[in-house]
Length: 484
Ligand code: NAD
Image (cartoon, rainbow, N blue to C red; front, side, top):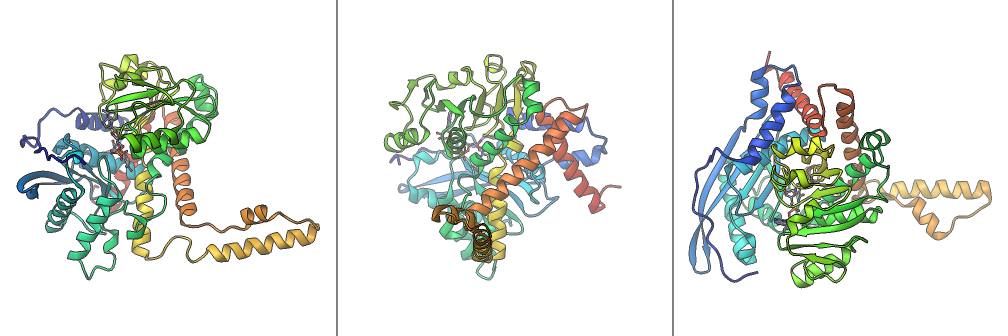
């Protein structure tokens, strides 16, 4: 950690009226809404942000007091609790938090996670604070959320996002528990916690793994690949990933393990490229040792990292921040598929340029939904107070073993110990979480692709995902009896 704390930017107006990210999310919504025959008032209700809490609080930092600005937006209460990550970045403002909260609503609907959307953010650069200072900021933020009823297992459940991880989630859970001693489900107030603090195995890798499942389905879809004039399968696909954090690292890891060749990784301080493919684990080890991916011996370092977005490849995975592909670089993008690991990496002005070039955009609200899917599993685990697999793993193993023994007796042949263990093994928590995630991503892919190919008003995959999502949210409001 750097030793010097930098004050956050001076407070700015809450609404700048000029937010490409929020404008993009709303433009995508409107494009899909225009294809639907739903009452205007209902569409307005789905689109607006239900509530936003803006706070400023003092925190003791290096002997002085710093006033910290933070937000929590709950976009939609059509299902409760609301759900969405907490971001620590200097870019955080009200529009960004609202845009991200809206995306969470649409994302949850598209993957059938029964939550409304929310998002939180603190305007700090976490690199400039010690762990102790970050803990103070996080705990104070949590207290603010408690005071205004913006957190709770049945109210609003945060999770990690850009700049936060399991450590921050553990601080949030601990602070909430201190204030809610009689709440038996208190651990379900936040997800993405360390496993020892009520987390679920598989959550950290979930977003990257989910992205891999989604991309795998797309490249194995013969109808889609024929339309794209591409071959099926991952083995001949070259991949470039922007951002080597939680989402980017895991996406790169799973795609390369499945046979794709990751030829470029882009970070804020430069990129590493290697046309023969980058060894992802070796690059991660280098980054952990040196604090940067640059200078990695297994590839060439490129100073202008962002320029690598424009390199020739089949699959581009922007997994860092929003608004990375804009109208100024869109025409130079050469990838055939863009899988949005980050939220909002393509602006609505850039999208038509990319679509005109025949690029398939796999939208954030579907492709990076793995995190919220597994967060849902963590929340279920917390409110049911039992680890997945605890009740049935040994029973399943016993049944499988008896089956193997019966087959061996009837055939007179025996399995090796390795084969027997493989066949008889019962599912543990991580197996079940990964299986639930895989099933969700596959079935959501098929829902979205059916809209894409089957609805004549839908011309791109993002609109297909939005249509599917808006229809589900509308149905939820209609069945509440709110709209005639
Ligand atoms: P992270 O903080 O773990 O990683 C982000 C990475 O991007 C870091 O390595 C950072 O150095 C790098 N980066 C920052 N600026 C960059 C730039 N200009 N160019 C290239 N790299 C840059 O964050 P994360 O959790 O991986 O989130 C990344 C994106 O994915 C965000 O948009 C987030 O909202 C989205 N997302 C995250 C999750 C999740 O489960 N973590 C789920 C869904 C969506």
